[in-house]
Amino acid sequence: MKLAISPTGILKALFLLANLICVLNVLQFSIVLSVLYVCIFPLVVLLFVLTLSKGRYKNDIVLLLIIAISSLVSVLISVLISNDSFEITAIKKFIIFIVTLVLFVAVNRLKVDIKTIRFIEISVSCASVALVLLYFIKYNELYIYNLLGMKFLYFHFDNPNFAAMHFLVYAIYNSILAKKQNKIYLKLFHIALVLFMSYFVFQTLSRNAILTLLVFFVIFIVMLFIKRPKRSYGMASSAFIAAWPIIFVAAYKLLLFIISNLGIFSFLTESGKELDTRNIVWNDAIAEILEYPLTGNYGASVIRQSHNTHLDIWVSYGIIALIGTIILIAYIIYNNGRAYKNNISNLYMLGFICCIIMGMAEAALFAGCQGLFILVAGFVLLSKTDNENSLKET
Image (cartoon, rainbow, N blue to C red; front, top):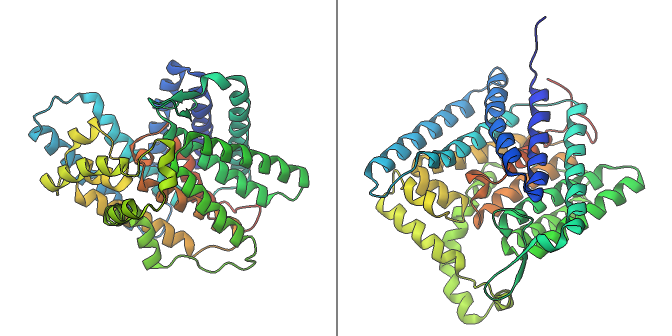
């Protein structure tokens, strides 16, 4: 009897793992988490192999190979020239980066059936409910305090910002699901989950996630009144969005002095978090980039995260990998944007764009964050919806 392996089956397994990892992380099942996390990588590679025959053009595969090869060469050069001790376990950051890009390419080539869509939606809903229940069950364990006595919700993630990124993603999913539902009680159910996830984001005190969530809600409300969405993203706008994190660094550094002296946004510093905390980290990354502009310094980036996806990619894997990643993200946004047929597909792509925007102050999407990249890849996959409730299988 021949055993057939389908892309839809692998996708279901990946989303189940991503949501399980998020929930079990709160319960601190470290051994189980390690096993589940390792299972993700071969599944992503297998999914990618199964999608190689799909898609008329192979430019995305060529681009992926360029990024992978140039990144590997940069890592090897960085290891050879580095005077610091380098542990072989640090290579996992490189693996996560490549696997994330591989998954994005794979889901961009796929269309799935209605059963897979429903499985993804149900798994996200169940994980959201589990997080709400765990918040009330383990309330006293889920907050940490800084030296100033400020309380941050972190849900046992590595830091509150990682928790905020997950809550943001779940808030976006549930917002779209609330829009999709026809039955009023299901709409209210998902709206309640959106409110809980939004409250969690604010409790983390992550300014980056809070601002991104507000941007999503503003655009979401506007799109509710658009009955016939147009092709939203042209080539120029797709490229601008894809490059936004590195553009933001340049703009932020340019305006920081003016903002500080005029007192604009000074209310954000009252919580004990200064406006220039990211700028200090970025200066360290920029110093490494200026010293190794072509290859970056992987050893330095492993020691300290750059808190910006594009800066972290540049300092870790060099300029070629950064340019290639920007082109790949722009290709996904532009390619899918030409095929939008309804508000739901537009909203899912908006979710993906918000996660790219969130990279302006966090590097976790491409550097590893408890399966977050799988949930973000789901936005790309579901953005190819042909109608409000179903997809045709290719």
